[in-house]
Image (cartoon, rainbow, N blue to C red; front, side, top):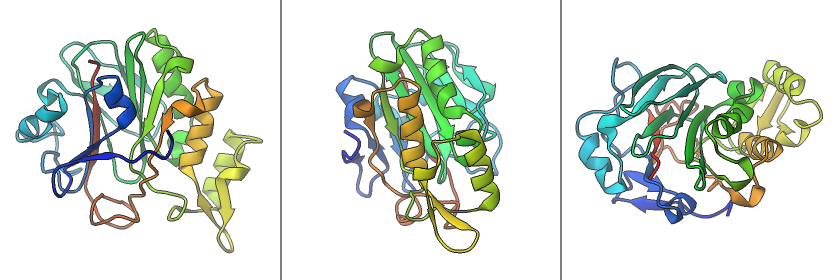
Length: 251
């Protein structure tokens, strides 16, 4: 499961879907540069333009009810209500309300979706290196369990994000990472010269999900690097600026 390919929709692709979530009937999408329905980081208010309603309807998503948050690279959690809308400041969104889409926005960071079909409960989370250091991965699993879900029964997906091939970090990042994850962090980094390391946020967050109770075989990560694919995806590191949206709703 970790290396399954995403399913593309449109030519060129406007969004992708995950095979594991589709198998459980979860409406979802993770958008590309070719999706015209998101607003820019500079724009205020609702993060989707009016045309997103039609663009994401085939995915089973009603973005007129979308729940979203002010993301701050932390581990805060917010619960979406039946009407969706702005959920406050958080990097982890959770719902038990069928049909209410949760949206997370990224441009190199990981977008993690966690779903327990037996609860049902759904979480989407925004995870960069700061969130990884600050406990957002564990908070994602805790949010699912707090909503009645079970980590060991959950399906997890990791959206397109910067890979270890391209994610160079410096000493201060390594200092924080090593302090936050004592005894765990070493396999996640490779030296890349004086004061530089390549950081594998994919493996780091897979390991942390497993440590929090998720079965490794139930994590779907296509390992699609944003920085390697600037023609298809936005990447902050590559200065290809914009917002990739990961949106999911309970069936």
